[in-house]
Amino acid sequence: MSTALEGVRILDLGHVQAAPTATQLLAWMGADVIKVEMPGRGDITRGQLRDVKGADSLYFTMLNSNKRSITINLKSPGGKKILEELARRCDVVVENFGPGVLDRQGFTWARFQELNPRIIYASIKGFGPGRYADFKAYENVAQCMGGAASTTGWDDGPPTVTGAQIGDSGTGVHLVSGILAALFQRERTGKGQRVEVAMTDSVLNLSRVKMRDQQRIMKGPLPEYPNKEFGDSVPRAGNASGGGQPGSALRCAPGGPNDYVYVIIQPPSWAPLMKIVGREELIDDPHYATPEARLSHIPECFSIIEQWTMSKTKFEVMDALNPVDVPCGPILSMKDIFEDRELYERGLLTELDHPTRGRYVQVGMPIKLSDSPADIKRSPLLGEHTDEVLSWLGYGDGDVKKLHDDGAV
Ligand SMILES: CC(C)(COP(=O)(O)OP(=O)(O)OC[C@H]1O[C@@H](n2cnc3c(N)ncnc32)[C@H](O)[C@@H]1OP(=O)(O)O)[C@@H](O)C(=O)NCCC(=O)NCCS
Image (tube, rainbow, N blue to C red):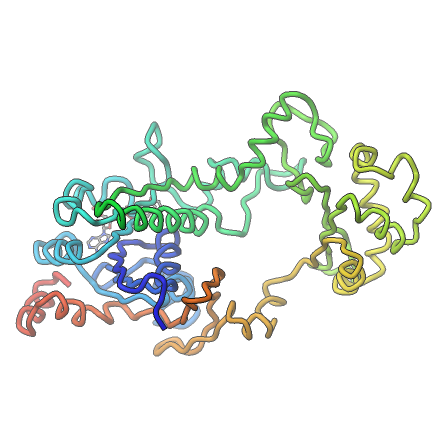
């Protein structure tokens, strides 16, 4: 079966999480991803948070499946020449080095265009043009400066970063959409283009509803927030819903750290909810009957529902509320998810064998293409495909040996 990106070649200069997320998705759509790594060390994540001595970490393996690995010393003349040859033959170059790193090695956007006018040059940096442009960034820096952290957590607590990697993986997903659009435009123009995504910009894009609330708060308090007092910027919302429908995480039995269920009160849900919790008299009570009436005492509404959820497990609540069309979700721990066999059956979690670390679990492709199903394969060992790629570029055995001896690969 053919794949969506069959024949598309990606020169992957990505490292850590942001760019590797993008190139892994492209690989799962069928692109041939050639990951360039520093000889002897590779992507720094290979050795970070190791759980098996001497083997690639899960951090690396879970972000680099379906790629080929070639080691190239980008600071050596031989290495630069190989990179040039790869740029001539690839469709897309992806990188997320610190600002100016590639330029310092002579690989500017102008140079890539000279080497290959069809190439798409896709970069991730912490910040867009402006006063922060030269600064490095990691996930939580982006969450803090993109508006997510100040709006996450509890009113009386510190700003809080979220567990979902919106700064790194979120930016990678944004980059993929830019790359695919550029590939599509190239079909018509024959020309490549530059694709740039700043991590802080991606986080702000994902925090868009908070910018909505910033504009609303300038006109008065936000009724759907649980906060008692409001300043002049969007407060931390606890577990309040970010959307137009009120929601809250409610305690369940037996009272463990993840024994909560998130319940949303859609307008048509009020009556069935009140029936289930045994408070039918509130269905037509003018203080509760309409969404507008409920808006001024949302915490009280959830406290009424919580008196009922506390006598049930989170799964019992889900079983009771879904049949009456009340949107809800039990808080699942990572262990709950890891042990959910249905996720393995549908391929979102998949077990892969790795030659040095043994079996591990990979989060698979969340985007399902009916004519291009992802075939998830393990991540490469460091430099596993160096000689194979060099031979494809036309280097003979003697040349390859010399490149190794010279430390260029
Ligand atoms: C993530 C980040 C902070 C890491 O910083 P870092 O570990 O210092 O890495 P850098 O990207 O700055 O590169 C460090 C050096 O390694 C060198 N290097 C990397 N790969 C190399 C290779 N294959 N051969 C030779 N040198 C290599 C670079 O040339 C650079 O050297 P220089 O500073 O002497 O020019 C930084 O890359 C960054 O800000 N990236 C953009 C934002 C981003 O993507 N952040 C999130 C990552 S998930």
